[in-house]
Image (cartoon, rainbow, N blue to C red):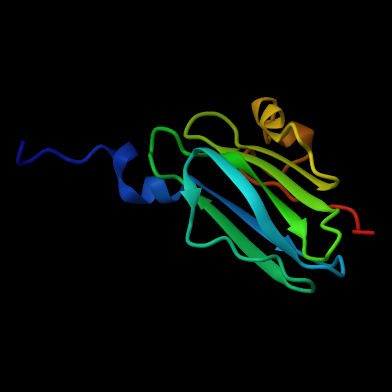
Length: 142
């Protein structure tokens, strides 16, 4: 036992690699604030920041267990009195298989958890750079 080597799948760096990083470039003319979220696995890395207008905001979700990775959903609401536009995000970065991502800008989607169950995989076949990376561009906020 003294000479045993740690299992590579349980090394801390491997847990850290199971993250979802949203880099949101907001050119909408309005800011957004987190309105809610749900994790099937994982958690926020620190506090979820506001998505300021005219800036790039990085939102990081991290794995808390190497076996499950990180997976869930969140939504941001426009920071103006009407609260009528939402940025809805569904994400998954599990240890096995492709990552998953679905994002929408518009009215609140009340079935986001249903979207989580059917979230499309990130594959090169559907236009992504790899099964772990996606560039997504939303429409303007009216």
